[in-house]
Length: 123
Image 1 (cartoon, rainbow, N blue to C red):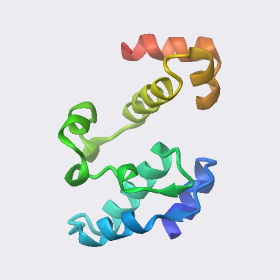
Image 2: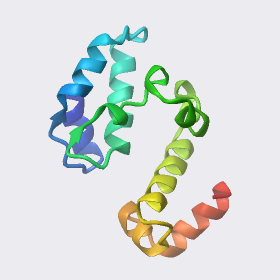
Image 3: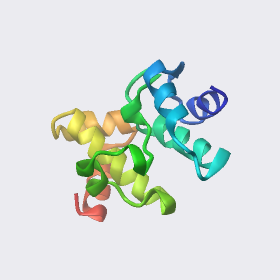
């Protein structure tokens, strides 16, 4: 909850807590990276979620990803801002069925900025 609160404020998201199913999944995971792995996993979940309560599918540890999602995700051990931006752009476009204006609004970008990023990342 501590990390959810921090990253919800940082990324201006209204996320209240981790759902019970997510907590159960997190308790079963070994967390070889200790607190840092937990912190980074929560940060990624906050960035990527569209829910107000974090769900199991929001937690992006390689151990919990389906094979299909593993292929489309980058190595989370070496995640950088460009990788996160690509993922967010893809997610916004999927959410809005390819509607550029709505995706740009969701991302807090102008249409032209989104088009530039689409071109830069080959999306």
